[in-house]
Length: 134
Length: 108
Length: 117
Image (cartoon, rainbow over all chains, first blue to last red; front, side):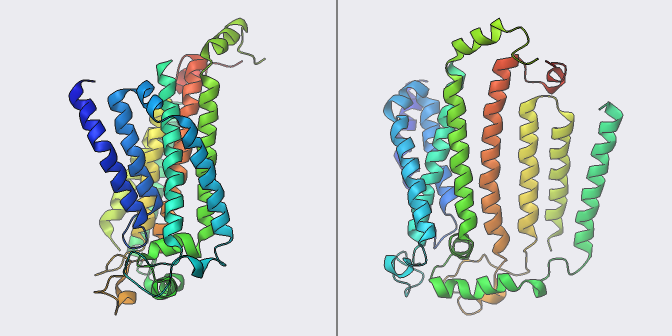
């Protein structure tokens, strides 16, 4: 790929991830949540792979921290869902409405779920593209 | 299946499904709001108990939380399965030698 | 009841079923499954419609009569789960098709029928 495509992909990459984080974190006030935000964040890596090729992308964003993040996220999610009843008042107060810092435990659920969807989709993308270069 | 049986099966399925859909639009009380007490409860009480604006988010994480736990388990298992099959695929030279030496592909 | 949405659902059912039954390549059958799944999701969400309604998000303008104007939010939550599960099934099917292609040299179901061990 020539220099224009590579520069455009490198410029758009942090902006797309920032927008994906916005959709995930505001999941309890606007339509969105874990799956749409996680898909947007994985799309940034897809654009980077199409511009640079899989070898350069795996050198910069290797697979080991992604595997670790997926396992840690799954463990935290199971603990959160099982013990949610006792921790409901401890996270965020449940008085205010229509603001970002509201909703008792929905923001933490959305963040952990968004990490799970993002890393799962990224692992599937890396594996299916890797079989092509053999 | 020969061609005639395939054609008749496809046409029969299409006729049955389209007939069901048209029938559901003609009868007046198929999905009327007199028979939805659960949706009424979620709409009137969901944002008051949890003080969150998005009703779908409270349903997914609060009132039906175990369904979401199962969905995340399926996502985790599928990602692990795809990763394991991809790792096993990468030693392609050894696989090609093994498949070439057996005449019927290892199955009697 | 929206009558146009149900016609679109019938059209998607027909196209998806045609692709699954009549096409020989395995990747095209998976694409037909995806089209069929989209039809099912639209059918589920269109059953919760209400005339002169708003989406089920509470804002400071519509707090008073929110219960009279909101659309049914329960099938939207169920379809969210269904979309994720369909995506997982499609990805596993695609990696299996790659294995079948490397093993037998072909990915057409008409030729795979003749390969008996």
